[in-house]
Amino acid sequence: CGGKKLKIYDSNVMPDEGYVEGPAGTVVVAHKADLIVRCGEGCLKINSLQSEGGKRLAAADCAHNYKVGQPI
Image (cartoon, rainbow, N blue to C red; front, side, top):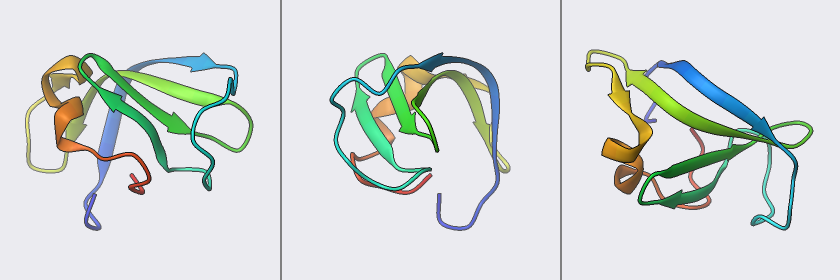
C-alpha cells in the first residue's frame, strides 16, 4: 500500500487452495467482491478495511484498486 498503514476490520481465514504463489502479504485475488491475501499459512479473505487517511470500506468497493502479486 505504498508504505501506508492498512486496518482490517473484518476477514475470514481460508485454506491455500491453488492461489497464485507469492510471499506472505501478497494479494492473490483482487476481483469484484474478493480481496484475498496470502499469509504464512493459508490466506486471508478481507471483507472490510480502511487505508491510512481513508474511510472504512467493504472489500467489494475497493478490490479493483489492488493487483494480484502486489504486497499489501
